[in-house]
Length: 546
Image: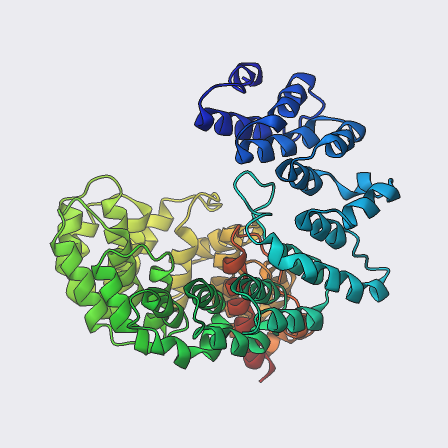
């Protein structure tokens, strides 16, 4: 495949060359020292297109020995190529050549100077930090739009790279101070944007950051430059804590044609009822705001009036064929649960006209509505799926539904049996478990994973303090998980004083200055997950300590 791609590296079509070099870069990411690829990359350093030259420079560094990459850097006079090479070359290579490093720090190209000065930051030499900060600041404005151009190794601006150095060395107070200084009205719009970016980097790293930088960000909501206002708004919206602090300032923007959607989802995500009419309008206008469902779920959890959201969801369903199950209206109905009972006729119509995954969506929502969806019970019995069984139990409260299903399962249900823990939990909460069902529960609890966690609550309900030691041995393993952490905390909170041995660990989590390490793939989502988990830990701790 790679040899085939190499035949297109000199294609006359610019779009083809851009794609080919990006594909070669991905293919050779961990397959370096391949001479034909390196030769093609080096030839492309003279391409007429800056994006091709940037990608080729990164590819070259990944496919040659250090000396050849450094030689290419020394030979090139093209700023685009030289910046891309400096950005891609591991600084461990350059550190062995002090003369090269010093030349880069005094280079004629500002972006190269900035990269070199950031690279020489050292944890062992904090005395040098002020001078390096000043050097980076001097070149920051000149680097606007340079370091994150198309084809760059990292889509990071100069300010984001500087912020990464500050957070990497845990320079919390310095990071706040620089964010506020860069965002000052006396600075250029480009520098103010870097101040906002540095504030966002700080919020992603330190739990105390939202309280510190939110006043600065709210001040920028009145900036004369739309791009700066937008960046400040999106940064406030990225953090639940910042959104709560800036709630009144965000509320002022709800009717703004440019910023209203972001302000509404930010407020909605912290359960602010003022956002509800605006969230409804966004849903009816088929908005593509990515956090709209999250916002509806939060306002529903906060007790918002369900009438308008449910009516809007029903309106959308009524306008579509019964075979269609639009995701957002379904999620809104599920969020409001029993309060969405008025939508049962539309959901039944979805079941009767079901295609593809339509029944799964409607079945889940009916289960969330519960007993108020009794009219759908007969139809649910016709679906031989696990989801329909669970929904039927929630709708009818008939334990025979769970008993029959569990009787058909082995005493050691497999991990793929997704509803067994939920059925056993419902039984434990209501009429209790049979001896065989208790064996099934114990079996599920023995296998690490989602089944273990979701069966833990039922085990506590059935066995009580007798299993406290087992639960305390298992549940802490899930506390730092963005999906499972809050579920584990709910069980620990239910255990009350029996969970007191875990208090020290909860306290360490609460007082930590840094965000919990999560791997969602979205830095802002990871920050919000930490904020929600932090709040859940505090709430659980209070119940345990009482």
